[in-house]
Image (cartoon, rainbow, N blue to C red; front, side, top):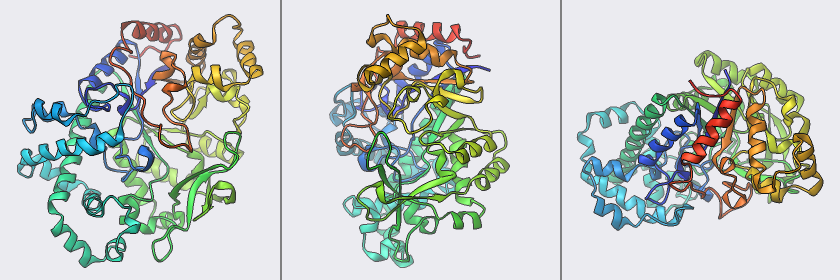
Length: 498
């Protein structure tokens, strides 16, 4: 069945609270998607953001971002008042997220809700804390991080850094309120998210979640389970993740994430990965795994290197992992983000897994891409694939066409689509239509591309800091006109949802 959907991060939703959240605007967005005949809403990772405000550098692969908790819901529950929300001063630029403002003010409002909630008396809360295996370590981690002025765990004093049992027991007693507050945030996050997801599903739309292949070094995952990662006996990082130099960066990308000790994971039958994926399958309908090629081969950069040029390739777990995944979660849907420099062994891994890979229309015409451009031309797609005009890491399709391409590349795009009359600013429509009419079973369009916005609306420019993950949709931008346009294109190419 041919289907389509929209990519929009939760943080990019309109709201009155400085960042998109699980407020009424999220439900209204689901309504608009349904009216537009869409079948999917793809989001970015939901974890609490860490370094650089990136959802791909989270303090936990299991926890949810407290910024997404809706103040409206807290008011409805009687834990805060509308006056409290106004006084918190969370509103800022409706077009962008001010993460410093959110950090400084939102937690004060959430703490007030926690103190008024008497949540410890709530049976559902007690059940949540008892059954959620990752929560005790995460709540303690966040309480300790606050006590240590936000410093990463690897800069804490050795008894806590190395998880001395006596030091941990003393910390749990000393930080009881902070642990309770963190547990409250996670309970409320999951309550609100699952309510929203249920509403979205009832509107005939499925959620595509996103799981980064790696976790952040400064995370409860690494602190609590150091044996899972390539650390030395003193729990110091020995190698970091990244990708080699390419047409977009002469020095490559140094992401800094710790690499997995795949030998250990194999010995444990990938138990941690199965727990991680189970949590994702519990909260998403479909899961996109970022940087899928890292399971075939991963790029290892020596700890302390200034950039990625000193790195080398190592073998990953390959199908050993995904056979276990298939056994544990039969029939569950995964999308493989197989972008970048794709080797024959990566292609074989995607084929053996049976997961649909990704096709990005921008890559078909851009000489900066180190992959095989022919793979991304629409006439070469296969049905078992997911096509995008671009992703959250790319220029918007309008910015790409108007600013990113060389004149001869722009001409090649126009020649391919037999379109030499549409103005540059309007080329997003022919490109969206090309993605929609391809044979790929699923087509996902970033909201910025649907609206035809330039690079001022770009979500992320890899290897840059300070201006990423901020873009937000204004309240009326996905309105009746835009819904109608999307519906007509979707219907024309046979992708209307059930």
